[in-house]
Structures are given as C-alpha cells and as structure tokens.
Image 1 (cartoon, rainbow, N blue to C red):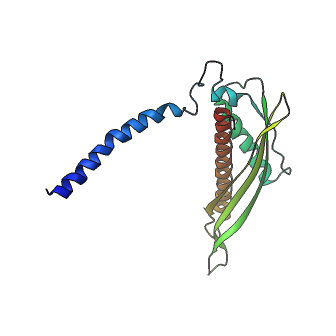
Image 2 (cartoon, rainbow, N blue to C red):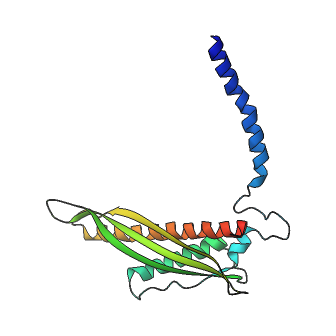
Image 3 (cartoon, rainbow, N blue to C red):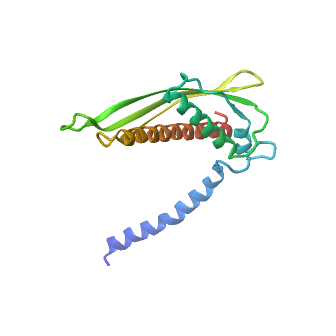
Length: 187
C-alpha cells in the first residue's frame, strides 16, 4: 500500500465519527409521524387525525366518480382513525375530485385499446371548526395504467375498477400524509 492509498483510507475512516456525531446531533430534530407529541400538552398525530370530520365528497349520482368518492372518503376516515371511534371534530376536511380515462396504446390488428390510463385529480381544504379558518389547502393527483386485454370486456371493466381503486387509495394516502404533516409542524 502506497502513501497516497493510506492517506485516502485514513480520510475515509476519519469521516465515520463525523457522520455519527452529525447524526446524533440531528436525531432530536425528528419526530415519528404517529408517535407521541413533543410535549405532554400537545396531542398525538393519531388523536389529531381522529378529530377530523371528512365531509361527503360530491360526485354525480350513479357515476364511476360517485363510487370513487365513497371509497376515497372511507379510505380517509380509516386512515385517520385506524378503525377506532372518531373523536369530537375540531377540523373539517372537504375534498373535490375529477377523473378521466385515456388510451395509451392500441392493438394494430383489432384497433382496440391494449393499455388505458386513469387519472384522478383532487383538491382539498382543512378548516378549523372553532374559527372557520382554512388552515391547509392542497392538490393531489395520480395516473394509473391498466391493461384492457383487447376484446375481453369483463377483464377491461375489472381492470378499470381496479385502477380507480388504486388511484383513490394513492390520493387518500397523500392527503393523510399532508394533514399529518400539518398536525406535526403546524404549517
């Protein structure tokens, strides 16, 4: 081993304690998302989410968006409460959704779509019930693709419904994470 290699090896090992010290100093800056509050008088994120009232998501009756709206509201409520009883509401969440399908690829022989995509867009706002002040607003969107398998009608419909469910879950998880972040940081 030459002098240059020994010096490079020493520098590499000299960085390890520096990284460990930096990690130890910043460890107190992070809080588990669903852990306890930073002080005894601060509620936990889970209890704060349990006190969010999720309003019914408006969608045209008997449409695919109505089915998605019900599933998304259920996903949000379960994400907030984890199946436990909700607490008295301190905040109200209003969500609006729009969705649409598009053809990604077409089979050249049959001229039928092989792959389609479903896009779901949402806007949401969180309002403090006591003050009527809107504290969080945001948008979430996702695109999920699904195979239509050419002429198999049942497979196409099943794939379409699965894509809608996946899109609703992605959006509800995104909203849950954003609200949890608000309850931790206050912004």
